[in-house]
Image (cartoon, rainbow, N blue to C red; front, side, top):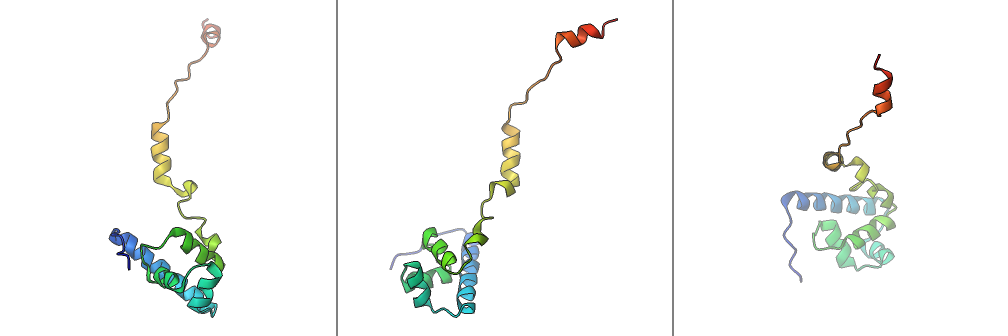
Length: 112
């Protein structure tokens, strides 16, 4: 068995929570692990690892499970660039600031 990669504690916790959510969704739909795994084209062991929050499972397999459960649309907000306030702030700080000067015709007209 492959050793799980080390991940930050916060990541491990989020994976555990996601796995639990997937498990609850599967049980509410009255699907067994073998049935859901087959519908996703993965093995039962892989589904078990996803539900356990293993960091070694691929994101493609996780998304396949969410798809089979009808939960794929709930992932649209993940890393949404429109919701990334920090990224927007950094981008705005890098923008070139332009100095807008009035034309010479404007200054000549007001010279009485």
